[in-house]
Amino acid sequence: MTRRMIDADIFQCADLITLPPAARLLFIGLIVNADDEGLGRAEPAYLRNRILPGTRTSATVLQQWLDALVARDMLTLDVQGGASVYQITNFHRYQKLKYKRASTYKALEEKGREEKGNKEEEVQGQYVAKTSTPATPEKYPLIDDIAMTFAIGYAKAGKIVESFGTTEATWELWKEYAEEKGVRLAVMNIQRYPTPDKIPGTGEAGAKPFAQVQEEKAKADARRLRGAE
Image (cartoon, rainbow, N blue to C red; front, side, top):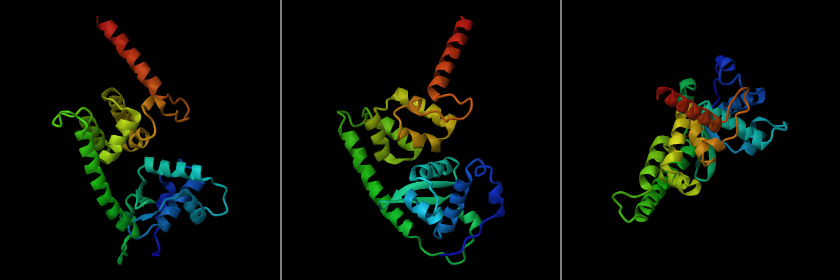
């Protein structure tokens, strides 16, 4: 495996210093273990044995650290060819490689992209076929909006609509949540929770659940309207 260069400024990185020391070590380990395209295996159990051997870090906690790094836009997580894969953001900005070796994960990615494209076309056709008027299907515009906004493809967008019963009203809440919290965090949560108000609190001091924020905003709007009358 090619040796990696670790910039000394990484220890002053604002996104990293807010994480536990072991989580910071994990990120450095991800860089060291990445292939020449900045990709590597992302299974928590594998990473624990590879990067944090001898520790009692649970797979659940390690996954939370990975999610935190994703939320900070320091890496992305994906499933390629049935394998969980991470990719370091801006990997090639810091790693100058003269001779790059082809990535096994890139090959999986290409295969997965082809399969995903076929699946999305199939799902798209299924949703259009369900309607009596294919030109103006009932659910397809919403699926299309979700897929385009979150860049997740029709298969995942269709699953969100079908599994969670997402409607135009709840989708407006998700778009507002995405505007407030960021698209990357929103796309992670919309595949786990039916509406933003179901997301557990962040646990930060003074933090308010999204539902409470929405309620307070609605009350403030009502008071403003009453004052204008």
